[in-house]
Length: 474
Ligand code: ADP
Ligand code: MG
Image 1 (cartoon, rainbow, N blue to C red):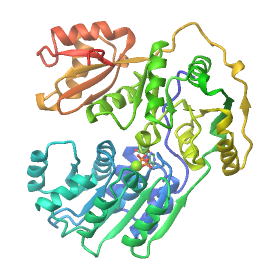
Image 2: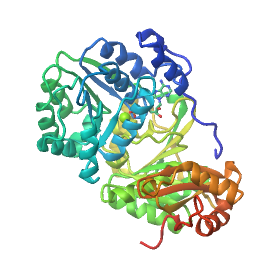
Image 3: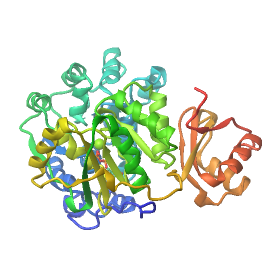
Image 4: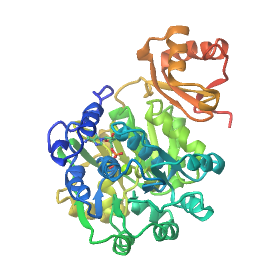
């Protein structure tokens, strides 16, 4: 299970060519490797490109960003001034992900400026970027509202409003801010609402702000064959130990473990680390910088297990998970379906393990009802240690203190490690350059050589401060 080919996107299915998009856009989609539309794109793009408002529901990772990104780009008028599209997202990470995808989709057109406006970031640079103008604004409700109140953001020319991850924005208490922002948008506009689940609050939002919306719901029961689901009956006090046994038995390279509360998250991460398994917890109490570091390490393959609450994990685009573990059964069967849908994407097989104690049995019955298939119970005794080798991730993350502000680019770091330290390019993984820090994944066998090069010769001839993550000194 440790080596898997990368996820291949859908290669069959309806083509983007049926949409009447400009040839340059189609060529760009080809370049991105978007050969066929995903189901949510096939269901929503024809309606939305025809100008309809839309309420769309589909699970995470189904390609919703392009489903609205192509529409807001098609609505842009090159000569108009002021923001023409606004995308509201619940968190900074999601806003960053959405802006990255929109920039990729926009490469076909001329110079579309996409600006991210999120809280937690200093306001001054945002003010000067706004003065230079942006066609597309992607932001969190609070910060967008802040700019609207200051008058630094003008939505007079807005053509498209997108509410992305609407359910989560409501979960996070943004209802009033969202209402306030929407009220400041021009009445003639196209509104697209995307959500992974469809609770009453989202229904209500749709009723209030959308004009005769078309509804697109893709509640597909995942490709059941690709997700191998197993349930284990546990006693509450052995739960965390059974997680360790599961990992040692199946040895998945990358696992997302869901807990219902952040206390259980913390406890499990501590337990795994104590057993020599690289695990990190992601929950609502982390500062933004800590969240960024946790995600960087998980995405670049230097952390085996990400332990998360549903709220913290929702909407993150983490491809290529080998396993999902439901450390506790969630009370909401639909949430269960979303959790396990994180694995077994596209052409990969994935494991979904669930631990259920006696008092969680009624929750399991509800899942059985929803998925219309019986649960496969397995005995905990089948979980034996598959190997004496420790379960370690292939990479380690090095953090370089210095980023875009110091003019560090990914190519410089790659150059230092390959030319300077003599690492083979296959031993250097993902390089992430933030404003003030750079993260590079290196093969575990190359950590010493890489650290020596960075701290003595450095990047572009300047020695840098570097350390391995997770940092133990803070
Ligand atoms: P969602 O918002 O539904 O969670 P995303 O928009 O983040 O999903 O898309 C998930 C991943 O799928 C992204 O990496 C994106 O680049 C990729 N993707 C989207 N549409 C296609 C497509 N038609 N073909 C191949 N890959 C796609
Ligand atoms: Mg999304």
